[in-house]
Image (cartoon, rainbow, N blue to C red):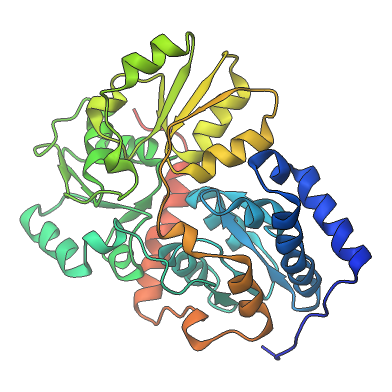
Length: 351
């Protein structure tokens, strides 16, 4: 990429950009005028560079609001972003998320430059399992197909038969069980146990589950559910598939991030509580300003590593650490498992 600095906005341009951000909902999230001006000075430059560099900025829904609302070309969960990146005609992808997501974008777009603004943005789930672990699981359970959550490294994906996300895992596992009596699922233990309950499969016997967990969702527990229901009559409580099964059994909805937003959009309730990463609740407030939200969220230390200054650096003059590469043959093997996800997620459902 040719190096180049974006021009700085004039006072009038800065004021107009700050007003734009305020109108998008940042003001309602607690951003004061000074915060808006600070963000506007960067979002104006970033948006000005995207066109000339033929760059696109996907952002996971757990990202900071100034990224999601200010510069992202599309927002979504892991599945949505994987598909949109594959369909994009941009030459460069500046991925506002964590490393496994940027790796997935590179795997699906080997000819494009993929940049991760925060090179240290990892994932506790991804780090809980290795390619060697998957090979050992296969050896212990010969003949059982291996499904791995998208929150895994490229090397782990390459050892799997299919990749799944929280939005499509149930559907894909149903299809696998239509042809197999036993399936291996990794790495999220709680998500695996929740899936076993949905599918009426015995964990550890029919559904073999790895013991990994998400640093955000493992910390939610069930003790306060009754209190919140009493304090907010009629509240709908939503949790992610990565939460503990004893919590999932007490709430109104269990699903992926995109599913949770769709639930809020389609339902009518006096209050909503989204027990997940705080970014989703912030996004929901801007998308549904007429609905009331009760907050019970936790910050992901990895997702919040990405800031506007790092996005601008990735566009203007990326550091070597910001460039994402997935060497062959790992990329090719992982690409097959990801494409299998698209096939199974979008084909006819299994029994």
